[in-house]
Amino acid sequence: MRLEAPAYAFRPVAAADLPLLARWLAEPHVAEWWHGDGLAEIRAAIADPSTEPFLVEFGGEPIGYIQHYAPHLEDGHPYRDQPDGTLGIDQFIGPPDLVGRGHGSCFVTAFVEELFRRGAPRVVTDPDPSNPRAIRAYEKAGFVRLGFRDTIFGRVLLMARDARKDDRAKPLYRGLSHRNGSIERSWPDATAPETGRSSYKQA
Ligand SMILES: CC(C)(COP(=O)(O)OP(=O)(O)OC[C@H]1O[C@@H](n2cnc3c(N)ncnc32)[C@H](O)[C@@H]1OP(=O)(O)O)[C@@H](O)C(=O)NCCC(=O)NCCS
Image (cartoon, rainbow, N blue to C red; front, side, top):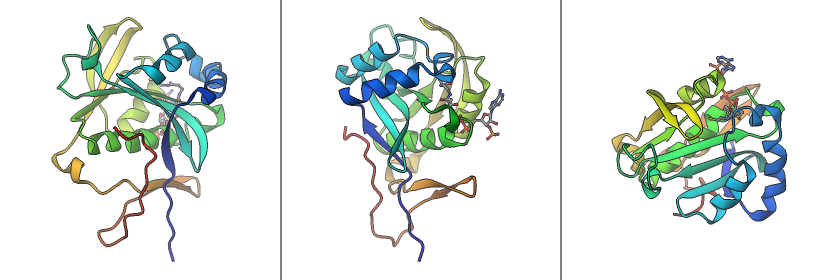
């Protein structure tokens, strides 16, 4: 009998997570590409209605950070020209030994599909143009390049993935798992009981 369990979960960040996030932000592979006020910004996001911060868990263990934000709720945000309801995302993997193993493209895919299911028509992300690993990971997660933008953090490559018509009706995402070093996607079939679970914060 084949047993499946959701591999990635997204848990709202709590104050108790801040020391772990501080350690991750100090890792060179994160510090190189994570621009802005670091921990202060994440702490502020916990209370900010336009930004939702999450810990990414894999197999129950925290492995990274992801947040979504609503450009249309922020005065003067450079992405307010995007379609109404667009959400932006930012993310990183904390433990250095987990980078470059397929996690990023997979949990970004899972998170974005959850945002589509909840009604977002488009999700954007904006890596540094000189961060080819991030750009490649986002392309693997279905993002396309929209073009360069100048922001308060410098020049970025704005990338987008659009929801398809049937994305809102999709069954709950069931998970991804690492097997023999490769990543396997699993989806519920039409007859399976709905045991798919997401710890994504309710809107
Ligand atoms: C960005 C990040 C989330 C991506 O997650 P990840 O698990 O490392 O990415 P994946 O393993 O899914 O995909 C990386 C891809 O980039 C490729 N890659 C790695 N280094 C590369 C380089 N220098 N040039 C081109 N491609 C590169 C990998 O080969 C892989 O592509 P492939 O599967 O086609 O071979 C993660 O690397 C990270 O947290 N980095 C540090 C912080 C950061 O950059 N955050 C992003 C801010 S926008």
